Image 1 (tube, one colour):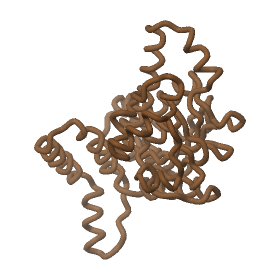
Image 2 (cartoon, one colour; image 1 turned 120 degrees about the vertical axis):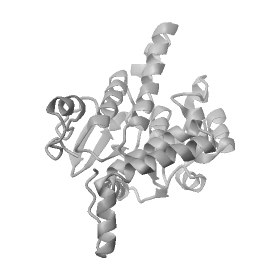
Image 3 (spheres, rainbow, N blue to C red; image 1 turned 60 degrees about the horizontal axis):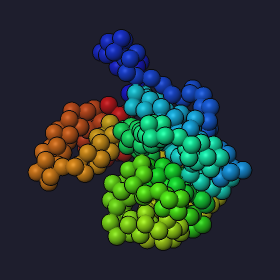
Image 4 (cartoon, rainbow, N blue to C red; image 1 turned 90 degrees about the vertical axis):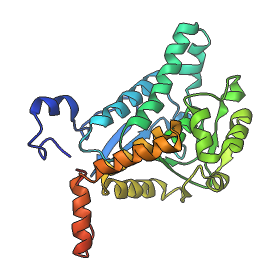
Length: 287
């Protein structure tokens, strides 16, 4: 959906709630948009792409803005130089944190948690393309994505225990067990050990493995397929996958009934029916 394609929408409402992000100029990572797919590249390869206070905040704000984006329908997150992300920068984050008091530390931990909340709240499916080191906050970013492609040489580690911290960081105790199971999540969070690529695929952390040279292209291909689908309905699916964690079965079934009825009002639903009758592939437009 774009502002131009919704003439019934009041311009003032559109201006406050719809925006295009293809021209966004990132300061602390690389951001490109090709077609309907945006790619975030964490780009500090000499340090294995660690996060800083600034990149945390910019990622949080950008994923928050994606809720209003009309031109981006799926997102790929990856790292440069053969690694995904080594976590929070030891010198630029960890060092300063040991000198702070509780109010300032809570400011930081809430900011990092807000990144995960923004990733889960944006309607676009997020595909993480994970190669090499994927540790600490980097493992969290991969975890918070909707789909994960890895390589055999991927090394994913929730390292918080190794630095004297609890594994309950940025939603790990809520999200990770739902991906790999309670027992396996407990092992990773208590020990901080690395999860290899092949093991990660067996455990369900990775949807599939790719060769390192094909990883980004495969992730972008998958994202493009999602972006060409019924994106309004995909956004509803993502919302329900997230919110139904806290629902009873009865509540979930009722919430899905209401959500599906809403999707049946979309033009994409009609397009799919008409394409089926005409024996052709539907062309979805996200409305």
